[in-house]
Image 1 (cartoon, one colour):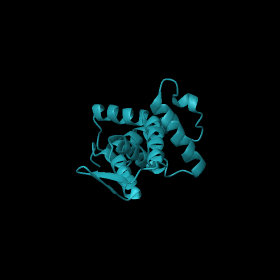
Image 2 (tube, one colour; image 1 turned 60 degrees about the horizontal axis):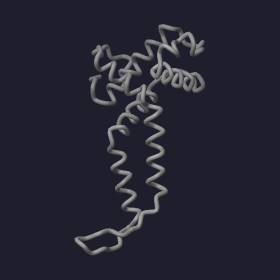
Image 3 (tube, helix red, strand yellow; image 1 turned 90 degrees about the horizontal axis):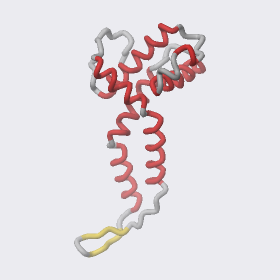
Length: 150
């Protein structure tokens, strides 16, 4: 998937939705990690009710089912969409610059008025290049969510 070369225009409502998804990424990621660890480290009784009778089951299977349900949540799908777009972001630059660009992009999406390009200190990218990459990042989220065709 090469989001940069596609000239398909992204509608404004989809752009706004994808920016909103990026805006809540950090919070969703923290909540997901906490919930995932809760499932992994939960004890689980291993006792299951069968029509009034109780029996023993495999607690690991129960944890596996809970993890599968967690992975199917909308928030997790949104996290994976942003992760995929972040992976594509800055694939053409060196690692240090790429990591700085990704952090700066998330800050800018979180609060663009508080963290505009001028505040982020990305000397290796021009202002127009940064916002062109942001547009591609937002489009990448839309593609990952199936809202935009490539």
